[in-house]
Length: 195
Image (cartoon, rainbow, N blue to C red; front, side, top):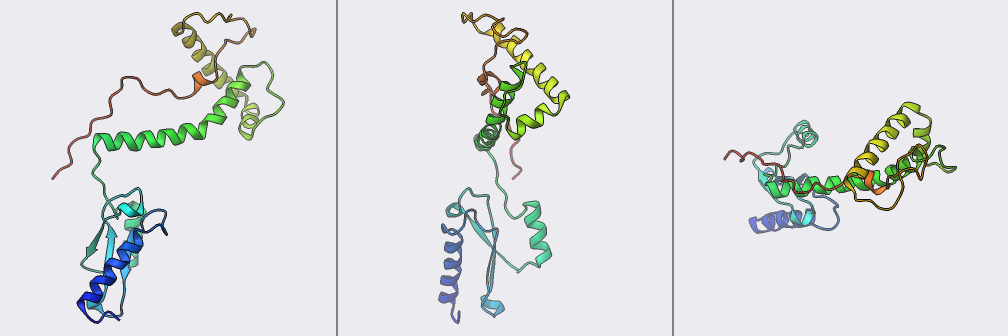
């Protein structure tokens, strides 16, 4: 039992320490310390968005929320807020763009393999089969492939490769269809957060 103030404070700290432990992949959005006594009950919510539980900051609330309020706050993401600097926004966006690129890489390479030939390869992935089964999608991807290959030939110096090595199809590397990093671009500017 949390009969005195020092035990209560120790229990609150233990709860927060546990929420920051490796037992959690991401920090819990809410914490409740319940001892059966209103004076010895604590309700916390996540104060800021944290990448790891160890970095989580919690704030003690004055009241225990009703379940509907917790659910609404959790669904809207209102349980935590982060003031994002330009650098942090760029870091977040680059992280997600890298994940998107990783997710798309195999499908893009396979699509290039399909559209760069007159006949599709004998082995197709699920995406490749989906593409082959949809002539309009295949036509549009072939147009993109040809447009990209023309741009690539205009920008790149002569490589010794002839444009007619593949009759009816321009030469294009698979790598050139993958998303390329923006060169010389500046991260977007944010308006200052109102104080």
